[in-house]
Length: 354
Image: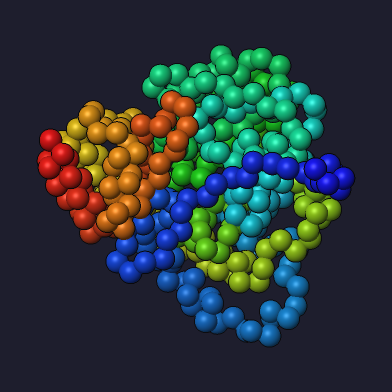
């Protein structure tokens, strides 16, 4: 090893889902929304004065923060906006997890958590989900430096009951508990109402899934004004201008079109429920999902085999070669047409396989 390499921070990076770019492909591997953003988003882009791009954006993203606060029924000083929920979560890790004690998160969960913990030199312990992929609150009663988990969980899609979340909060009054709600809009119950009772709660959400804006990178945290102030202090010490002009303007437009948002959610949920029925007929099993994806295993066909067979047809799903879940596929809910093609292929492949 060269001498200067001793001082380089080395980590195992997060591996994002494959991003193929092929004609007529069916992309069901990264949980993107299959429908376009709200019509007002395009209008906002067209109406933008390009001269504004020579100016720095509002570092507080005030227009967006106020729009989110109004939509959620909270005060603007309870909202922190960032470049996607990944940026927001990274800021939360830097701000809140500094006790030297290990933070806790599930053993099967969003695989960025351990990456951030390693990057920021935060010790961590993973708490096993039970055999049904449910969070067990008793696992979060040990001494710790903070807690983070998604709800619904990723990649399982399983919703954590509100009672379980509240039990975890009650048992951990001295640390910050982060509930990562990237998929909550697809049928789960948000922890936002618990903010009135627990000042150590942080709820993180995103525009990437339910608002069809993964490419614009908008996320936010909602918490007590004190916690949001601490987050902003870290942000301004790291990068004052995290959100660009276009993200702020289009984010406001997306929030204001509640009717389109609800209509899109309803379409995805309807397609999800129909897909569940057909997958069960084809021999798949899975927990009930409250997200825009399904996490499935087949009674006789290995997940890796199916993943590779689908990929050869330019149908992309997500496979995780990890303990406990290496015989599962995560399947994003696409349009009705996309899911029909996907299901037709599965029917043919499984029938021919015998």
